[in-house]
Length: 459
Image (tube, rainbow, N blue to C red; front, side, top):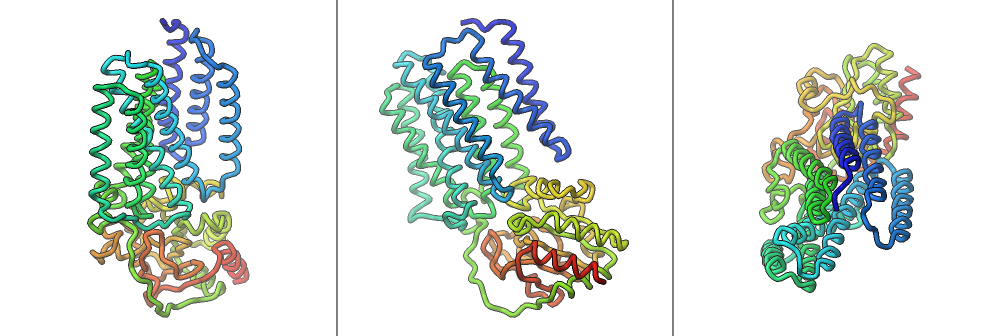
């Protein structure tokens, strides 16, 4: 069936909206607008299907499912805590990949062996990539939610089992293209789901955000392939955009972590992945009271604030901004140091601080802020660990070795706000905590910052 001219022009307009959305999402200042533009484009694309003359079976069921899915998405997005946003992204990404895979299975069944070579090829590719994205995303969710261990999980002979499953997947895929039979596509679905799990299990906690980005790219490719299967141009465009942007983001994140992507994905088999098994020792540290910290900050000339995931968990971003405002009012130079992978996903920390109305100009990325640490009087680290751990530079046996970090250890004084001496997501100790120039302030980040603010006001 030929698509009406007006529908083709609408498709073109929606494609432009998707491109503009991605462009706006590249900056925190315009990210909210980019999200709205993308949502409007998706809404138009969905509604358009009902008015292009396409014969839709089970129309009532389709509409009901759209309403139910929209309600679930709306409620989930509104209720989720900002600290759990990466988990939600992982789940939504997995659902997208799973949906593409299931659509391909259904189309395979409806074709009844009468499709062209390219149809079978793209159907099989969609099943594989969509299933891997689904099962892999579920594992990343479990790791981020700490339902399962964040350390690398390597099953006995895991390397060979993974290679065997991968080879089996490719073999069944070729067989399904050559001899399109439904039982083969079901076997391919099962093998692909298993490979997705085996693919992500060996990844350590600190590298999970990179895998989320990679799986997001996979979902995009699955959607693009399903666009060919369904003869839908918008799916091709949207999927390609997601796949390309996800690939670029994955490359950037791997670079920020200072390791090639292969080390992130397969490092557990050679002992080089983030998420080590260093034994935690019981050593003394120097701790201080909120009034001690307030005095250190109040009489400093320059202070750098380093927010981490612990800040997000405690929802202390507004209190941190209040502290920064008080210090600035005393004539103290204050900046925020943002590591590329601070939090649990790219931009996570920027969004948290934007919620607290922290001026974007005060947020300095790692390359910009690192030269300033050596001339800084006090660095206040709130809930961060791995991104300031000197082991990344000095300890070749450390799982985070080679990862670029914030040069906090070169500052005059360092203050750590932590609940306990528990290590970061990578599971290793931070030697900076035991440095003589480091002072610990134990407790909930929000409560500790509130006490520091009160003490600072009393100076």
